[in-house]
Length: 167
Image 1 (tube, helix red, strand yellow):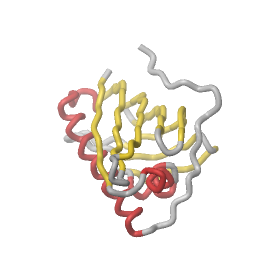
Image 2: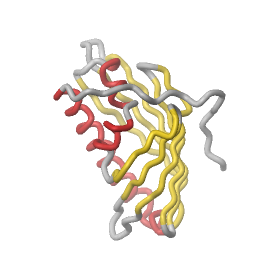
Image 3: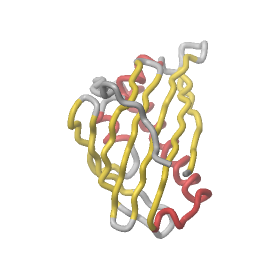
Image 4: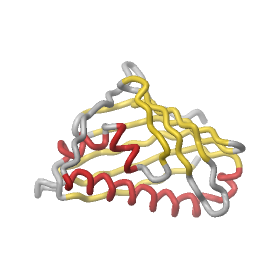
């Protein structure tokens, strides 16, 4: 089990950012390595995502379920990904907090189980790649918001679900 966390600060208001974080079209454009994201229902998305860690570059088929969506504060997702000789299960949470100046601090964390060749890269390498990918994602999303690209909140929590990783 690996745990990752960080934060990103923006001078944009959290209610405005929320629409970008919950619009699958914007997510498909901003999430590094994403080939596609498909909205299956308001609480389920599927995606194809290529992630490179060192010489290991699997393409994952990912199923995500929104387990909590409290606009504009908390977004939590559970994701399962499978690729040739690689797999992961993850729970990711983001808390959007007002910073007192009208902007937002996004606190994010993820807990994941990784198996296969990508797991052999170790937590240090995975952590470095994860931090870079998350930082790029937040920067790209913020840029879309600044440019005024339309975003529509389409994700909501699946009824009666709690995210958890099996030990």
